[in-house]
Image (cartoon, rainbow, N blue to C red; front, side, top):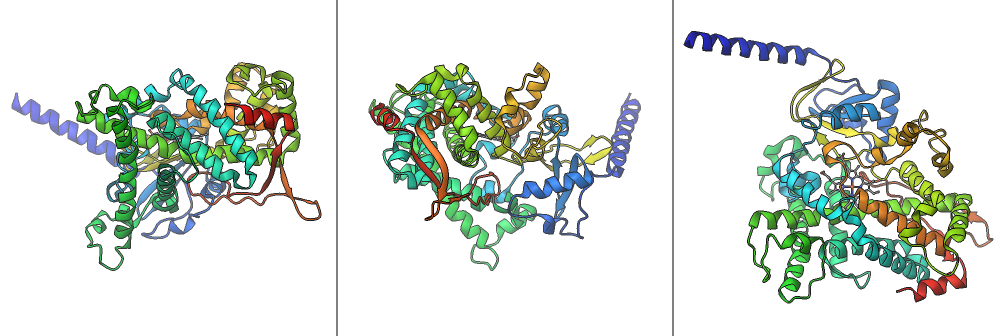
Length: 512
Ligand code: HEM
């Protein structure tokens, strides 16, 4: 019996070994030639990395491989490859990199976008689905409508600082829907803290692809902070303190309001009942921890994406006055001049829907998505993908596919109104691309669908947007720079913003 067992184990071991030996002999996907040891470090660019990767896709094909000091990165340049890997093989392509700098040193490891695949990430996704799932988001409509009017009221009163008000809208909306906290001024301390943390996350921790030398050589984390070259540890300590403050402060403030009976219903209070009693005391520490971190993650993830998308919309309108006029004519015909648009108008505003789809397609707010970590060795079309490889969806390239969208670099909402069969309409809808793939797909997609629509409708109905003019009255088209490494956020550009008429200005001023 023992002999049979030993024989079977030896045979199994030989089989596993021969399979892995065969796999290791397979080539990695094609890509630019690396230099010894350092790999492709010099091939990366800090700005608009997606353009460089799209260039490689033309040269090397649908799937491209590079490495940075041995850390493999794979780019899925087509929808089909992203589907095959991130969606169909989601059980092994849904992990997140173990980033020592962002995770352990800066304390972000419990934020949804950084959580390793497993029980915790599944619990977080469940909570987010409860709060921002397709049926749940409808309950935020009154808040969204109210906030969009306030946004326009502020912009029309002080158009120069339109960006400040968009930031306040994005941050204020999340603080209110997640923590029931109302932002009163642009200088609100929680709003400022949130903005500071989001800036630290996307422009400091995640700059240059978010991979620090300590992520490649984890032993560096044990250097004393005073040691030459350990500046990253000193920075991480400062950033970590800010992050923790932002996780705890709005949550604790809400708990105080729960105790005094002054909390307003929001995402956290909905979930809190099971984890805290009416005095705000913890009854289930695990659930309390999950809610605390998930709430914070939603703030961080929604700030930049919402700001980016509203800015891309405004940029598209400034650059395409003919589209702006057409959308306004549709709103005038359906809504009229006596009231502001509401969510109930949406089915009657197909052109506005087409504008929104084109903003998402043309704008590509998160062009390379967020990295997924492959959990075990895999073989794809005869190529070897090693466990630990970071896999990115090149969403930018997918949405510039001329077989699906003619003249893909141009902003043409009419493309979504062409009579086509159901399959073609589905393939052309940018939503299955822009929000990422598989089990880590964006959980905020239903909220942004509502929030972006009402902002666009209210802004178009009430506001004239156009390029700035110089002293001689000549239009000066904005020069737009994209310098954020994760989001395609246009740097602030100048534009001329004024009310469409005295009548709409009065409507906005009188609106509650
Ligand atoms: C137009 C606006 C938005 C776009 C284009 C966008 C896009 C994305 C993309 C591409 C990802 C990565 C998905 C992947 O890993 O495959 C993502 C993740 C995420 N998004 Fe969004 N997003 C938007 C708005 C929002 C909003 C408003 C929220 C919150 C209310 C949000 C919350 C998140 C979170 C928490 C993750 C991480 C999910 C995970 O790793 O499991 N997003 N988003």
